[in-house]
Length: 329
Image 1: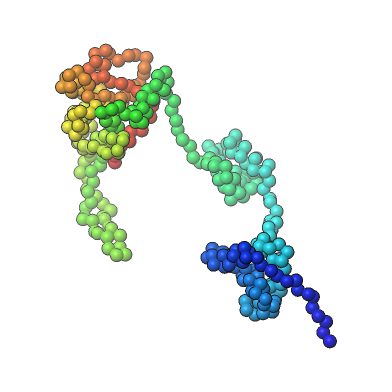
Image 2: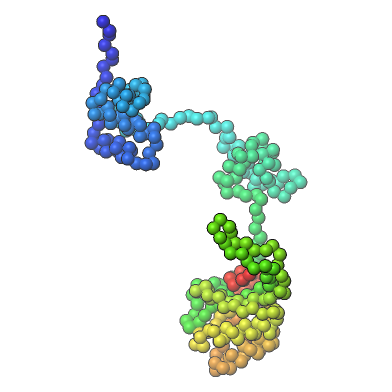
């Protein structure tokens, strides 16, 4: 006569647990292992025996017993994987600190900056470990940026003037950022461009025909991003005056025009000043164009006559990098 097996404890599932288990089964993102454990619990809750559930799901009876017991002991949490210790950590906090300090405070011999290979050789770690440490602390020894500080004592006030024009322009005024790009090569392909076809991209010949160079004068409206451009063959004050005349025609006459420019010599010639003076006379001594230029030095005041003629405001520092927005190539 065979001995009876151990008594199996009953398994009961609440309505809330039943809803969660069915939700795990319906969800497409649920892991297959968790979905299988949910099916085991639901089948056992319906009154099926361990052998019946094993045959239905085509799994080993011991697997059914394990997850049935885990659910009885800990509920839904018992169906999740327990944390595993994994491989012991080889890189300690002291090792990480040593790499960071060495990166920030030292430089390698016969080199300007550290690389993953040189740092790995100096610390005895792998390149991948050095890369992970640098990435975690946002360190990039191979990258560098430049900066220049202005020596102009009025630099802050002048920057505020320019920034104020961008952020809060005057009423009935238009703020334009003006720049020119010279030596633009005018090129043309030696053969017509072959159009794109299914499976074949657009194709063009590798050689080209030179047609000289051109200069592009452009003004970008800060508020809307609209660009007014004009190409010219040369880069002189005469061409700049033609570009100003184009701006004078295209900008509505009731608007004041504030131009933010660099300190190029063609922007300050006597011919340009006479042109600005003529626009001032047309508007009954009220200047229409306001030029904002960076100056090389603030120790010498500009001539009073020039100020009265052009109403030039100089809001940049000695080396202020205004980064004109209208440089088009």
